[in-house]
Length: 407
Image (cartoon, rainbow, N blue to C red; front, side, top):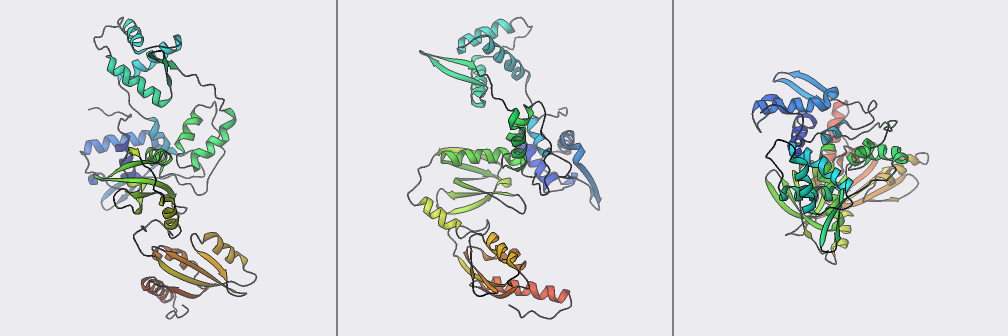
């Protein structure tokens, strides 16, 4: 089959972008999903969208391809371009223009009137491939769901009408531009910008998390399920799990997104990486038990990161930090970054941070940032203290010091 820039299955291109350009940086010979020819077709397809941002490197195993984007020079996430490349059959295109034109001429059309009009129009062409009623119904249903047309009841008949968009978006140019780059489903703002006469391109971001853009469809489905209190079936790596989606977490350091959900059988809370979810299937509405919100609040109050679950035991940690009277910025930082912990003043120069969490090892990178100011560190999990001491000893040996005895 000849190469085509357009795609039908977005999940396939999402997996390809993630594996080869965003996280994987794999070689051509590491492509095992299909043939080498398929690899070349996918590579050329991505190059047609992102050619300006693709770079190449050479190592002992061969050539590697990766993305290189300077956020200071781009006003829009370039990965949004993948959502604008969808393939259509000749029949899709034919029905699209004829259906919208018929609805523009007529104030309301039934399915039978639509079929008669299409037959009159298409009979002038030398083709026996006339659309049947089932195909037209599916296309009308698709357009109703997309909001392109409306469906009304007039007596006993169902009629389809064309929706006219009279919304003035010109005053929303800056808001749409900002939303498209900072919101979880920013691709919606990007499509809104496409309808403006001129894009607002004056925003630049020092820390710009663009790599999760291909997950927008998954994230959108999760938000809808959360709002409607629906169960979902998560499909990931051929595994299926039915859960109730509750919250979306976004990492401030990497921008990575996580789903906090409750398993349907065990009723325990757990986290899922959204970029590893292949598909989301919406299920029935779930009636919240009376204690669900209180259980969720209690779980979140003991979650430092995204590795714990509600069946684990909590670990108690205390850290005393030294901060002089002229070092209020240290205290402010403790208050700002304490998350589910608490901060109390012991005396003029000592402040105690206390937390009960499911996984205290997640706190290790944050605890290390106070090295040199920690006068006391206690934890009911000995592994945390031992890890902290060992890391500190290795650092001191690296810089020519002795063993640590400050903590």
